[in-house]
Length: 256
Image (cartoon, rainbow, N blue to C red; front, side):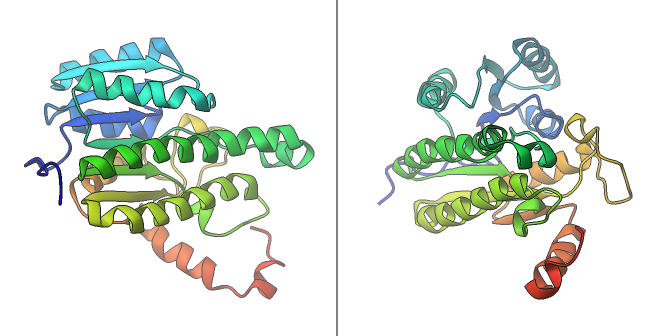
């Protein structure tokens, strides 16, 4: 039996945003602030966190706290989450949005660089999710939302290190979803395609690139619903379905 009744809300009122200074997370946070939520921000830059904190308060957030931390330091995660829960007096929604776009060619030549990218984009997320899943399972309600990527749907020569990290996260989230659904915990995998952000500034832009505001709004809506996997924009669901359907004997000869 649940130990707590789920709160009556459209979205979580006590929200932890990890990787809060990323362009997509900021756009999502701006929408969340308008609902008078309590927000705890986590990122690398104290200066950027303070600026975002002030902006969210102006937009209507009830209270905002922040913590600057290197998320690759996995042994700091428990303290981070405990602090967020303490400052917010509870926690019901988490958005994990941190990551880096791996330099594939550099990774191909360097084991240490590859492992660094896997730690940033995969292991750190899995570490955070493990702690948070146990908290929400005991609480018997909550929402865990992670920004992954369409790159995790199939390995391609142009970004298979990044894709490996996101693919592993996707499978981990699938398992968590199966584990936590009976505990009234939503686990949402968000799979953006190309987004025009500082992280993709070195990538040549085309018509498939989405605006961060569009992606942020889609994530905001996903936090209110019961969806399991959200492709952003929606046309990426069809694109990746097509790519996954290509037989391996053909796929391996393509330059993607």
